Length: 373
Image (cartoon, rainbow, N blue to C red):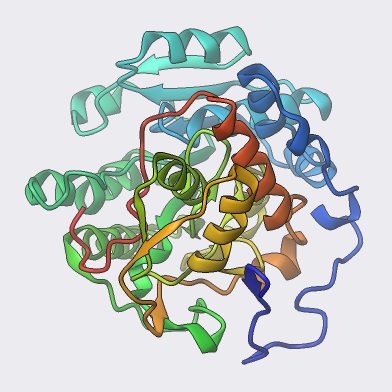
């Protein structure tokens, strides 16, 4: 049995999954992901810009600021923006803003030509002191611990966007959201589409929908061009759903089958699509799902990993007919297919975990179905 299922053709149109001239998929498929040996090699690949990203950075005018730049995605995204701008011959500031509790992460960004500014984004006087720039990437958010501290979750996810829109009402904003706003979709339906009505489950997902609504409100009110990225599980070798599964199997713990299917995308590909989304930002906001084309089965992926690890997986629970799944046909039509396929990433993750490679210690808890994180 294959570890992925082909997408349903529900609503698909000819060319939905075909590359167009200048798309990401015009470039050769990456093979080096399977040969990564060091964190330095990994971070170099995660921040490697594609030709379309370089061209987009050539057309986009002005500096770029990343709010919440010290999370799992921010550092490699900031580096990609820096590298693409340099390759495009464009002189611009790329600014990473965070509290930077990890000073080593701040130093690494600075070493790669990214300016850093320390700021608690919920401190409005501090926010007011940030530079006004024409291009904003919004990465801030709170997920884990959201059930125990719902008030902080809503402040970060549901209130902060208003602060950011007031500060950057003259800018263009690409803001991260999550596929969790949709709730669950039938496995047979091909995943949630941008036109589906959100049905969030739990405080976290509801607060994320609140984040989208605030961006939409101010985008309409002040004509702010906004793109909302509904991301379904970016993965690299140190974290992500595949890392969670590989570590669970290696530890001999049972894999929970309740969330029977999932989507993933190599983080470098989601970074590229995020930067390409600057040219899609509109008022009202442009909403787009970002993930890979494969629908992966937890049981089948675990069995494949078990063979590669030399350790048969144990299972608990039963696959249900719904899961948190996204259909990213629009993104693939606009930006091209991801360069790294799921089977490549599975092999690379297993090799990395088997060798004891670095782990960020941030499990996704993708198996959660009640919305409590």
